[in-house]
Image (cartoon, rainbow, N blue to C red; front, side, top):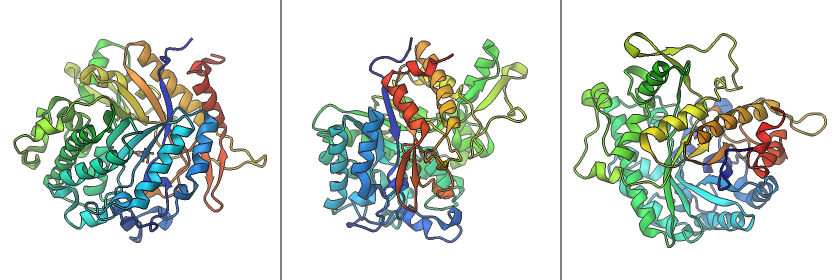
Length: 457
Ligand code: FCB
């Protein structure tokens, strides 16, 4: 018995800078991540994405592994400076050629390509022109979207514009932990965010205009679901309230509604405008209409969340994690209910079909004496999260698919190669790939359309 519809899409995800390597090959331009990785102290152990998983050269082998897993879809991202070395202007045919081959081999293997246009590797040449702070960035991005869709749109049907706007805006421009490593004031950070939203809207229009056939367009923000402590209507209402408010202080930029309300309702939420006050971004006439260009779906990257209960007058109060709570090697709390309440709250408010575009965990995996990689934690984690997602589907939430993060171990941004998120183990010294136990388990989950999740329960 399963509640996953027959059309449910089972996939895995990765991103260009995290796996491709070939950072300085075949005419690729520099990205802001190439630059940040050169900065002493910026990345754990001085790691870089120069070689990463060498996927650029091993793409055929990697697609063969996807086929072996029976993956139905693969979410990958396109490196903007690989396609347009200067960000605008001259196209790099070898760069585009790489994605062309990737898409062909995916289709050959029966794996549907889900392409993300921007997963953080912004062209350095455009950063030098002001990056996202420059309002022209919206047109630069839309132009890049057009170039890619004109080349691949005859075979790629599913497109996402931006990955995790909160993260590249906040961690890249406020905290400076991610590229470009800036620590700007809040007015500038919010202007960066507004231009990125505008870029999203213009890219949605560009994708539809350039696509030769029918296409579906979405984006992939991250959310941190608020989980009601109990099922009481009061706790559920408190969690919902917290989920869609812009809090004062450090968490403000992580709010869901600040980023999603403009896209789905065409306006910034009023509480956000109050919280950010004079730092709120300048909005020109027509901006909000462009940003709110209708989407076919919304992707959500979900890893962890927080519990909330109703306090005095129903006001949400965050409940700390219990002593000894389960956590991953990255110290993220294991919270399967995030895949129930996250999709449910989002669907209630925005009403669009959704995908889980990322979910997974970092784990301390290594090759055992028997030559295998045993990762029971990844199996248990994914099983719990998927069972929660299935409950959301059973309760009427329109979830179309699930992409595990990640297909293979990779460069985890400022953490370098410290964290292993893959279903496939990568030995970085030899570039050998080993399917982890979780990979063969996931293959069976896919083949049974989720029935496997209930085995022995
Ligand atoms: C998300 C990113 C993805 C990966 C996972 C662990 O925030 O989108 O690239 O790093 O976290």
